[in-house]
Image (cartoon, rainbow, N blue to C red; front, side, top):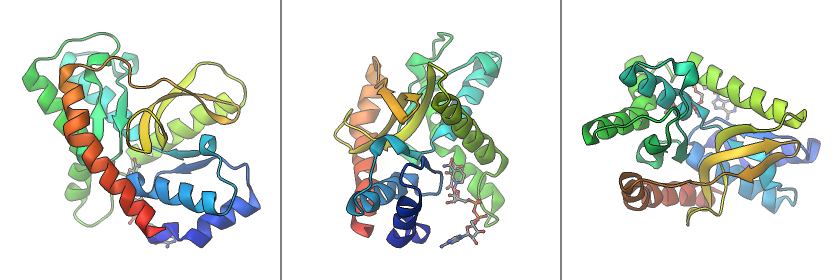
Length: 219
Ligand SMILES: NC(=O)c1ccc[n+]([C@@H]2O[C@H](COP(=O)([O-])OP(=O)(O)OC[C@H]3O[C@@H](n4cnc5c(N)ncnc54)[C@H](O)[C@@H]3O)[C@@H](O)[C@H]2O)c1
Ligand SMILES: O=C(O)C[C@H](O)C(=O)O
């Protein structure tokens, strides 16, 4: 979190107040609240322009579902909501397109794999950093989507961890329509399955609110 020393974020704000700030540095669940609150204190916070890059969770969910169901990954979309760490990551497998069904065992296994894939890579690299190419791919995908939307393309949608009023967590990832000024329309949670509702209330929100408070306390 040291990278997010308040003075550094405030400098970005003063030198380029209309910048789109895409934050991929972990812990994203805390660095996004830190950046947002620092910008707010500096008097130049535009919540439409501060994004936590959680795209890698969507990329992983799409790949793991495609592998499990024998689908072409380029045709699969799984919205992933919540945060970007462990149990705060909630893949909405019930909203997968194309529509597919999962047994409870499959739901458990896929949800667990998507939630822990980042840690799996960190452990495998044993002190040599984290996911590199897939992080670059996810970061590039998010930024290219944002640039496309800023250039006027309609219907550009990405999941991103941002200021939100969809749940009682003040920052939360959902799919958003992006536009010329950044966040344009929150597409929300959609219709959740009982499995997802129970994860959201019992696991995602308690852990995510703790991470968000850690960020606020740091500021
Ligand atoms: N959001 C995502 O999807 C995602 C995915 C993978 C990794 N990450 C995160 O991306 C970050 C980078 O991961 P990595 O594997 O490249 O880590 P790394 O340890 O290989 O590299 C971190 C770099 O940051 C530099 N650094 C440290 N403190 C700094 C400071 N105060 N100011 C400027 N630079 C500083 C270090 O010198 C180093 O070069 C980590 O926070 C990681 O958790 C995010
Ligand atoms: O850096 C990490 O701890 C994991 C990273 O956020 C990832 O999703 O690969």
